Image (cartoon, rainbow, N blue to C red; front, side, top):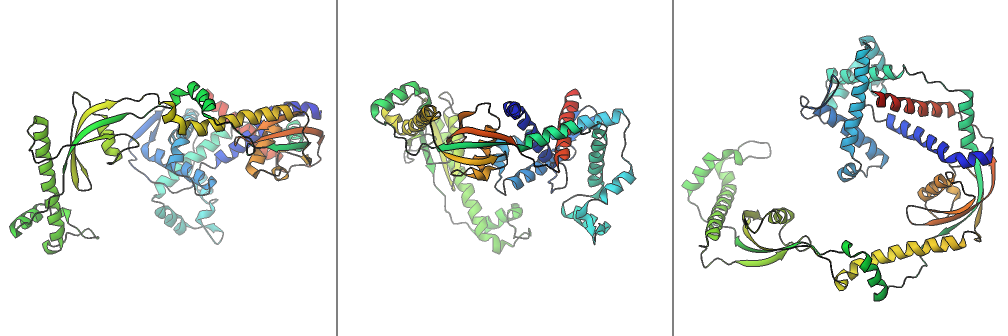
Length: 475
């Protein structure tokens, strides 16, 4: 029996992880702080249900908060983009809309009494252990919500729960026994950790060249742009009171204090002069740009030359992106303001990306070569030593005993045990995401007698997740 279970753990352990994921996913529906944008604009329509921009922002904010909590405050917009959080938020709303359409087709409703009963269970509105209407309104106000918005959303969630409760989910004795068996399968193993720290690599030019020849397309030079440019430095002038007064009168809204009130001309004078100088600088830059295009540039204006690229850019990213859009047919770029000065560019030549010579690529080739060679040699070492290695012997381990695997971080120990309980081989090696390899030999197996008091709940979550997924596919 234990041997059979060992061979089929691959599928059974996956089922356990489905349960975990379903449990975490359930937390994505609920209370949070939301930033509402244009609530009227619909971003999608599913059947008769419209998904608004406000709802999408709310769903995104909820997901972001959950991920940030899981990452212990180290989640940011870059990670959100890599996780496809916007797509997740929209899919979450789309799935809800599918179920709400189904509810409408069966004329299911949520009554005010149902809503009130639900509100009275939400502890963040409690005072002295009971629902308090004043706290309820204050909490909504702090989160930029009104009662109509919150209650409409609550009714929506209750209606979704009402539909999903129609799926008959029961836990049989056999299912409970199977989960109990899975959780209590244990292995006593001998293991040895292999790392690449002591592996030596031949980094001579001959070895590097052979590797470089097979990877030349990965070592390309940057595209660079040969440009000519003229610079208009900041203009500094003296202005009479009439000029200052006229400009202030026409542009009073430019000059406000920290409270948003327009300041007097005396208090705004320095800023008025600064704006007049900035305007004069821009005007001169535009005149020079027109003369430059016509080939009539004054002889006292210096034309400079420079080659710019991603790694050699003395200006800024915006300037480089605009230069990239120029062509030899339309080589002139209107004046760009950089730190109060204006630059006018002319594209002279584009140097396309090309394969680097070995000497130019060597610095980039070396770390990649070392990394790949270490992986190869580590696997060779594991292959030749797996049948004869001697290592540490553990007690009987289940998939929750990561702390018993010493010499590596607990996260890697968890990864190792998950892969160990998925394997069908008695003696082999497992490669972790970090590149570390662990040799193992399963010495003995047995079924522990522990029982899990939450196993029926786990089965319920597994079946709920499976049924819900099936329902959404049908819808």
